[in-house]
Length: 160
Image (tube, rainbow, N blue to C red; front, side, top):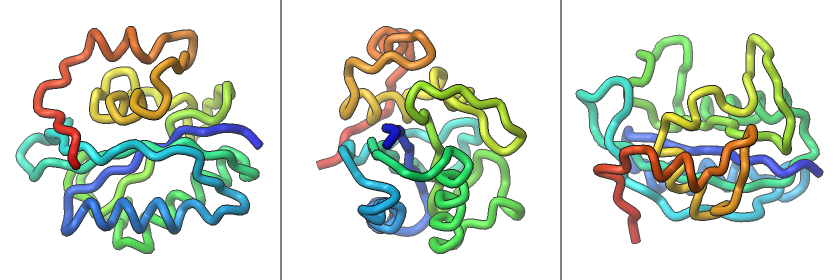
C-alpha cells in the first residue's frame, strides 16, 4: 500500500472536534489505514485573512485507493461535515478542508488533482504539522526541514 500524507483544516464551529471526527471517518482501517497523526495547530488564515484562525493537522496513511479514489473519499468526508465546494469562497471559512499532499513518490497533473500538492511548499500551516510526523521527509526532491526553515511560522501555535 502506498504511503500518503493528508492535511486537514477548518475554522467553522468546533474545528478540533470536526477534524478528529473527520480523520476517524476518512481512515476506515481497511482501504485507508492511519499510520501517524500530528498535533492540532492553531494557524492564522491564509489567502483571505479577515476570518477566524484555522485548526490544522496532518496524517500519514497507507491506502489501497488510487490518488483519485482517495480524493473522492476526501470530498465525501468534507460533504458529510457540511462543506460545499461549489458555494464557498476561495480560501474562505469552512467546516472541514481535506487536501492530499503526497501519494508515495507519485506525481500527477490531472484536472482534478495535482500531486504533490502544488502550493504545499508555501504553506507553513501544512508543513509545520507535517514535519511533526515526517521530519526527514523529502518531497519532490526538497527537504521538508529545509523548506520549513525558510517559511514564516509566525502565529502558528501547537495546541495541547
